Image (cartoon, rainbow, N blue to C red):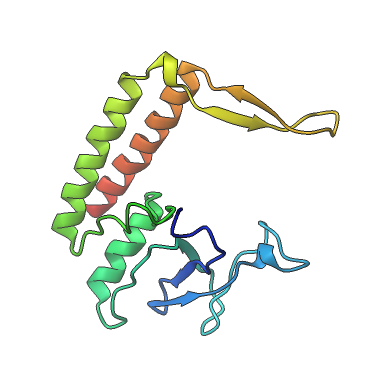
Length: 161
C-alpha cells in the first residue's frame, strides 16, 4: 500500500518568509477552491504547494531557499505517493545547474522517443454535463508536453546565469 493512502497535509512554502507549513488545502474547506491561493500566515503572501515529500531547508539558509524557489518555478515539486521517497533536491546553484541539465536531457529524450503503444489516457469533461470520458493522448500531444517542460527548464537555466 502507498505511504500516502491516508489523507496527509501537504507542505506549503512561503519563499518570502522562508517558512514551510503543513496545512489542509483551501479546496478541502467549503467556499475554498482552486482559484483561491493558499496564503502565508505570517506575511499573507502566496504559498507554493511543494507536495507531501518536501523537506524544507533551514530558515537562515538563504541560498537553499533560492534553489527551492527556482525548482518550484521550473515546475519541480515533491508530489509522489511516497513509495519512491522524496527524491533528490539540489543544495546549491552548481548542483541545481547539473540537475537541470540532466532533466533537460531526459525531457528531450522523452519528446523524441514517444512509444505509441504506451500513450497516457486523459480525462475529458463531457460537454453535455454527464460523466467525464477518457481518451488516449496522441503522439503529438505527448511530444508537446515534453517540449513544454524542456522549454520551461531552458528558461530556468537561463535565469540561473
